[in-house]
Length: 327
Ligand code: G3H
Ligand code: 13P
Ligand code: ZN
View 1: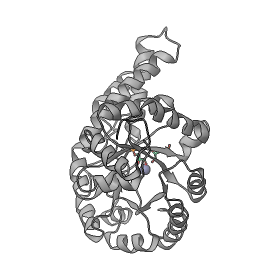
View 2: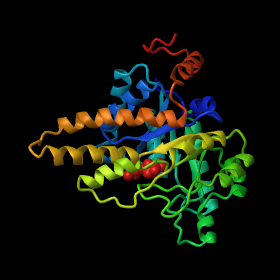
View 3: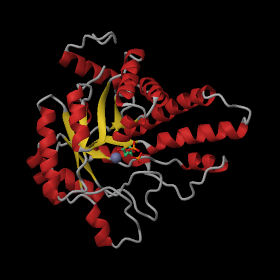
């Protein structure tokens, strides 16, 4: 059952975070649905501009539609991750997306407001929610001076002004995380002090944490032992998700960790079985391993076990006509 991102946020706010997972292909999609159904968690499936262009946007959307039929018990929202204005408009008009992210965070505050407001008006006219970003995610490095490092974080004093001026439904905040497998080169960690200040400015408003892969060290070690070179890779401590959720983070974005699972499975398979040239054996292992990873991650997010109550709340609201047995 595809639901609105806004409804998922309302049910989760202050209690748990919904996992927002990026997919690029069928294997990731199958592992994601299996892992979320097994752990009984609602989720957000994220399609990035790069993912939509990897094969074809219609191919990616068709994979998600097929998964919806294969897993009728799944409850999820479909979200465009890091969209520009053109991609947001395409997704809004497609009728398939629950929400879009307009990422104009690299622009000036005024320009970010202008672009975000424009996208939000178009999206809301079609009942689609919008996430925007304020501040700039990226490597907050130890060698960067405190002032410079601070300049990249979301300024709590800008938040209310931005939310009021744009009408957005959720805000991605830069609180010390960065995308990819090399976060926190030194002792840097999540800036809960900044997050608490942001929440105080917009109480009850859904916040989003990007760059939240944990980059598990056992995964990195296995990749390196199988010929990889990911020395120094490091991520967010997943035990901090619960505190972030209490402080208003309702959506936590995870992509890199899924790529690590893919990388480890394929490297180990081709190292240990050099005779294998078929794509299906590693693909099968990946789907199973990714499902296990997702289920474990949903436990850390606090979303595991919430599926029945979320389905009940949302199907009552929408008069769900699906075949998921929710009536
Ligand atoms: O934040 C970016 C996501 O990890 C998506 O990555 O643009 O390579 O698909 P991508
Ligand atoms: P990671 O690179 O930490 O997985 O972050 C993903 C993300 O923020 C997608 O928008
Ligand atoms: Zn992101």
